[in-house]
Amino acid sequence: MIKKEYKKRTPIEKLEKHRFIDKKTGCWIWTGRIDNSGYGRILIKTNNGKQKVFNVHRYSFSAYNNVELTTFDIICHQCHNRKCFNPAHLIKSTQLNNSIEKLRDWDEFQFENKEIVDKYLSIKEDVKKAYYNWHRKL
Ligand SMILES: [Zn+2]
Picture 1 (tube, helix red, strand yellow):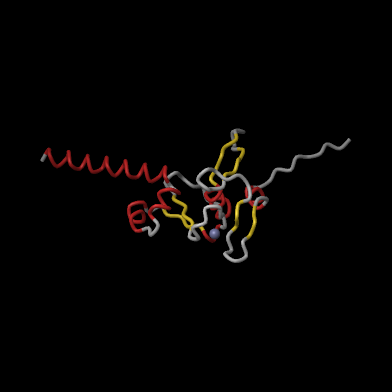
Picture 2 (spheres, rainbow, N blue to C red):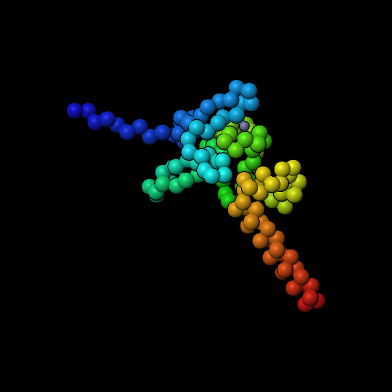
């Protein structure tokens, strides 16, 4: 008897299995799991064999551009469609200081990158405090 071999899907195959292309906008709508805030979620087995949940748009950006993302890499939707994972609609920003305040859709951005924004704002406060304390010593 021939053992049925389990076919391991590549990240891109996994993503495209749940893709509906909106012909009007060009958005790739995620048809898989959506979280409470409207973002697609994907369950991926990591190298250590554990399952991990990823944000679909972040996962997509990383898979199609073949780049590893760090927690400081911010991925924004240019199409403002949270369910979209078309890599052409996603932009990355690592320039925290310059880009955060410049962004047009601050609310949407904060929502989309809550963890990073919180981290950034807390760092900013720490820097301010450190600067202030340093000044007082002079
Ligand atoms: Zn889109």
